[in-house]
Length: 392
Ligand SMILES: Cc1cc2nc3c(=O)[nH]c(=O)nc-3n(C[C@H](O)[C@H](O)[C@H](O)COP(=O)(O)OP(=O)(O)OC[C@H]3O[C@@H](n4cnc5c(N)ncnc54)[C@H](O)[C@@H]3O)c2cc1C
Image (cartoon, rainbow, N blue to C red):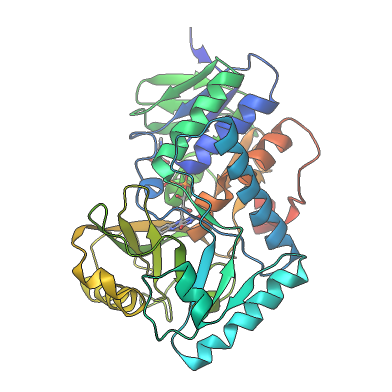
């Protein structure tokens, strides 16, 4: 007899793990939830990224979305822990006078949503981060941000899920190869190890979400890979203790910029980003380029990030780089993730397309999706993220 479940989540990255956690909490006790990944859990983008938990104050909706999620990360730390959670805050840096003006712009954006960021002068910056270059003209400091290690966080989410519902079943190395349909309903998935029937299937496949949609006979979802080059130093050498990023970042990241995914040079995406690790390493990134699934390192761009990092933290010049790699952000064409049902096929749900904020936004994504599946009111307005907007 074919195997059955109540809910199948396809994709065991940070988004799939968060969806499993929140469905385990909100669906009826004992619901059978199966998580399938064709590789290991946390083996794709969620293992090739940084772990900045970033409140983005672009507008009231985005602020509520990201700030609620960052708060949920703190709750997960209290309830479960074990994922190198570190509420470092974030320092926005500049060395160009044109960029220094952005401190006040971003500070006002936070203030507009009742939040607070502080402009630090040179002395205050040096007190907070003695390892930074002494000629920097100050910084903007936002205390609400933090850092996690995403691979460990996936494990923490799944442990929470199993505590709520022992029927959660995690199956790595189980590729989904097809979707089972009955008229306008999805009724399960075909895997390399047999079919599983279920009323609900959630597509959490990140940059591969369009392929999974096609397996269900649906049009490709509007998600494309956006590559980022990263480098990490050896342990115990980091000169910094706060999440650092160039303030010019706000000109092009997330919802800010008009970019054209058919261009491979992705203009402007070269702000430096540095993150202290719990082992004393320093993670340095992060560029943005559209070039399909190509994960070849762009040495010239990475070199540029490293030089920028040394400009801000001169001690890094003596820190050995022990690993370099490329991760693929799942970039949604209207810059907002897709979270919710896919109306042409009843029972099919999507949680994908978080670009460079998927770690930050995974808890609220899991929550919003679980609330919708459970038929409950949502924690924040979920309308801007409904996938149906792409059907109009
Ligand atoms: C360089 C870089 C830096 C970043 N920095 C940050 C940061 O500081 N803060 C932040 O919030 N975000 C950051 N991000 C973004 C974040 O990493 C992503 O948004 C997030 O990891 C996406 O998670 P996901 O679960 O959607 O995708 P993934 O982690 O890619 O998971 C998708 C899973 O689906 C599986 N899958 C695909 N097809 C199938 C199939 N047919 N059957 C079964 N399984 C399948 C894959 O194996 C994979 O495990 C960064 C990203 C990059 C690349």
